[in-house]
Length: 290
Image 1 (cartoon, rainbow, N blue to C red):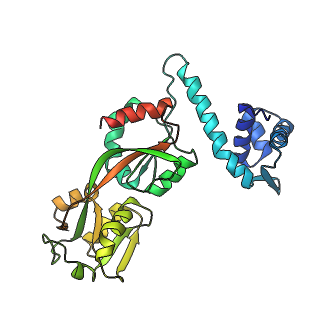
Image 2 (tube, rainbow, N blue to C red):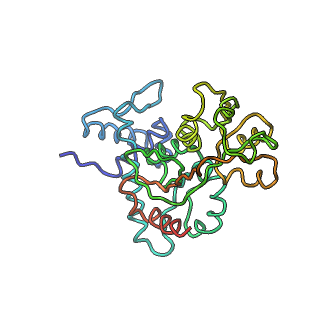
Image 3 (cartoon, helix red, strand yellow):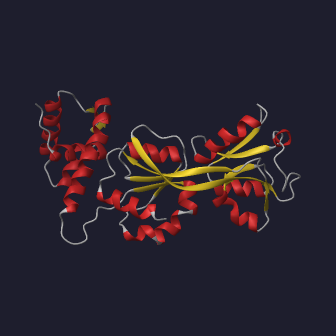
């Protein structure tokens, strides 16, 4: 039976990060030889190589990539266990990620209210919903706030709050204040977020089937850019009410009414089995009250 130690896994993770035995030795206050022997011992115990050695650099091979997220998860669990029994304020910092809509329009208030009661680990990662999920699967984040109905099988989620999707156009558009005419809207340019974003997911599900097969699309990487492009008359868009409320109030854009409201769910997501981690449990409790 192979008996792995956390010390071995920590050494492996450091080498995977640095790609260099000498740098790892300096960071861990070890000799280069000790690091090399530790990696060889781990590979010998597992019966496989974990790195490809090229020009004085070590690169993870396929088996190394399989081991890395599991090793990181084990080390995170160890840190959480130790934190439970340390005196004083011992809460483990939370590695938080959020989709761009949530990060730009909801998170600033949350950081000033609920999340000020927990410790955050560095900066909050902002990316689209798919990228946040990938980071959770890779154990690079502890908790994510996303706007996508699609969920990676390795993750768990709970419904957090609802968000309305709004169809917007330039101020003075012929359809402003009217119910959507899909034939006329098919002739418009559509200003959209990138694929795999939550906003694009909503457009593809609710609006795309109602439009003609061939439509003009302008793809942008942020909601602010989408709203500003609509304001400039570049096309129409389906966006979160959070992103367009201010522009609607200033009447620099207009709203086209949908036949029925489109409400989407915003979710809190985390890795399977991680709900018991103290930093995750604390954040879930606080966010559930908001």
